[in-house]
Length: 405
Image 1 (cartoon, rainbow, N blue to C red):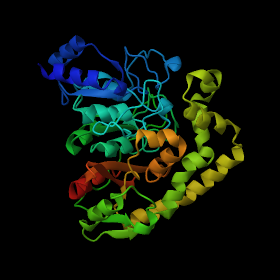
Image 2: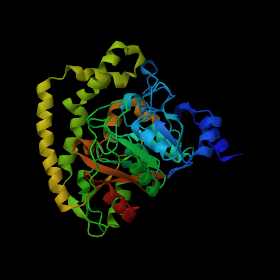
Image 3: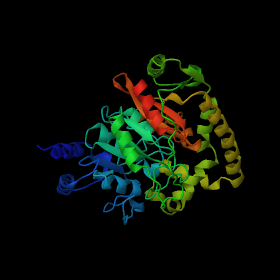
């Protein structure tokens, strides 16, 4: 059995992680002919990112369209020699952190199939964790790349907004969407992210990457344990062990950041999701996941004044974040709050999802870079932390990850 035979066999065992897979002969031919810094590496693409020749569905078959060209990120990776194996399942319209909101099926965790994979980049995480691909692309608006990476013991790179093009991506929240990378090694995840980093005239929000001084390992801020809230059994203890291994950690008050996080769904900012796909959802109510429909359609009634009120609040939280990052070079947090079962999500789909985003929702709102880092296991399942820093601190975060990894 060839390496590709084994990978395709794994796909057949976990079909719900995929929406479309390319024929094996085509992939074999591309691998054989590939050249460049990523030559021969296989990758999967979340199916809200365009891949020429494969319908983009955003996990909604009625929404599907045939892209004329690759998304900019996909085109850059292919030019570097990487080969697309297929496109992966997701929480519909990238609305969710659980990986269950899809007509293609709930994506089960790679190890414990009674538990969620995390979302919305669910299939991408499972594809990497099972060794089907070498790396995968997701998107991260509220944690959709970092959460599934953490639940699978992967590195999840969420670049600074605008430094990686979002051209060819179905928007969730256009001003907050970021294409992300998941991989089993930090070096590969960062290498892939560097290949994708480029100014793109096709993306109005694109901006050049201005690297901060990476320097030696710097000051890491950590939260007061009382501000973490409820975590799954064993998670607070494991996080405390990670913190204890960091020399000279600085305690940071994260409560303003958590308040900013709540604005993404509890405030008027959620209306940006309606701007992206709301009219389609209103016109196709029977074709949309009920939870996704409720979240997006209900936001159409939000008054404009509330949005400006939230913008004012965000200005204040951004000022707090700037002050935090004059004291520390990065902030260390759990990536999420726990690892629910599929049954728990089915019983309380909105409540469970809300808890999952406690530590991730604020990063893009406050223009911060983030990196999900594996940090051992709790009760036999992966546990992950994240490093968060100011815009353009991506390389510094990678250096600090080597200290805590």
